[in-house]
Image 1 (cartoon, rainbow, N blue to C red):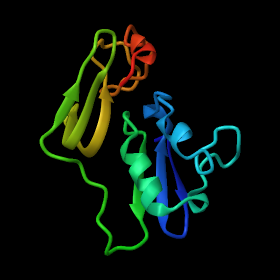
Image 2 (image 1 turned 120 degrees about the vertical axis):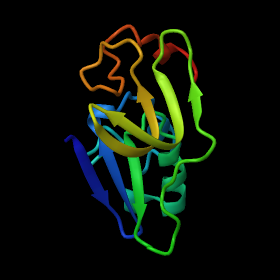
Image 3 (image 1 turned 120 degrees about the horizontal axis):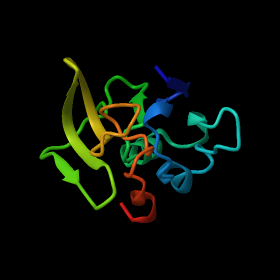
Image 4 (image 1 turned 45 degrees about the vertical axis):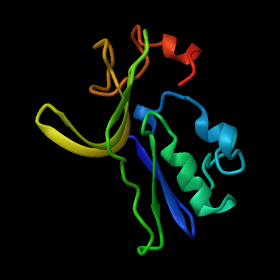
Amino acid sequence: MTVKEYYGADITVRFDLARCLHAGVCLRSIPEVFDTKRRPWILPDAGQASHIATVVRRCPSGALHYELTDRAAPAEAGHTPLTIRTADGSPLWVEGDLVIVHNGAAATETRAALCRCGSTANLPFCDASGPCTKWRHQPH
């Protein structure tokens, strides 16, 4: 697994490098928290937990997730109805209350970029190694 956790006083941010498609939503939204030129590149205590959670929920690939330290706060959850966005030359951008089943293994998710060309090394997720790379030049 390529998941790394970044702990803060009020929020823990989980990052899965294998799922990151470098859309840059996090970097553009709160650079004081997310900065790839710094190590560690995620500093959860550099921002307000509620704002970080909002930005993490906008990560289109699902590479970022969060857990609030306050157990009474609502956990990250997918919305209903499920939304699937498509465009020529892009993965399937899926958001909602998801259960993804691959080779018999099920995982609950809130967001995912699913490969639709079959060229990924990270099935069922897109890794942008195949013809699904034109999305980088399209707004999503």
